[in-house]
Length: 336
Image (tube, rainbow, N blue to C red; front, side):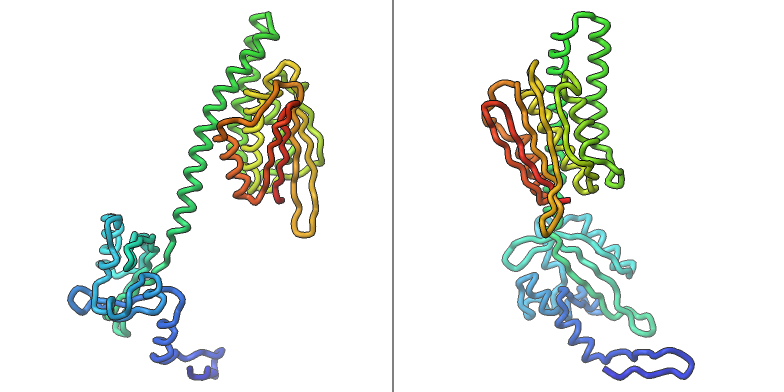
């Protein structure tokens, strides 16, 4: 590469690197790349780098002279092909996600960026294409969407079950029809608000663990505040933990109303939390202790606890459930 020259009337300027150095840089780039010749029939590939061959599994001899369509297959969509054709026809740089296939038949989602290469006179001489395998990223996004959908369906079913238990317990303690109607309305409204509020809380809200716990438990406990005790320091929750902690408390409260202490006349819930400061990271930990409810045993079905476990694992937290005869005890940790 030539040395930079200093202009008398301006700052230093680098001259263009020579063609040989440019070819060497592209050939050994870590990003898969290919170049095709639109001035030859069927726009064949005239250059590929080592990263392209590694990604696709083909040798150079199997690629040079072919149109890029040999990478297409069964799941390549007409929409992605139409997007590529439009970009080529309009001679513009475009990124298109397209399903391509390796030599061994395995597919990958290719974030293909392509565009024209023009000479100094603006004449089209080549097309370049750079490939990026985004299969793992798209699969992770799909799994996250599926988990969210399953959690929402599970949560809606739980709302109906909890509402029926709240109604039944309220009816037992109230004989006055007018008072019963008012209390039921208040409790069901609180339950609705708790779900909607915790779904809509944004990451930039200044919310503490005690705010979240009180909102949820006040809605779930059929007898209100006398059924639970909260004890712990004032801990602001970081945005990335809001949904996970809220859904964990919702699930535990739902289970308690349906099968544990909150669904019993004499049932009590004790929730205590603290913040540990180990050498590597601050951690929020809480212990959920139920007493006065029915005798408990590990559930045969674990759809709810599995969803919660997946959510907590996603934020590098932990949860342990201890099915004691006296009631459920849960220990959970969340890195702050």
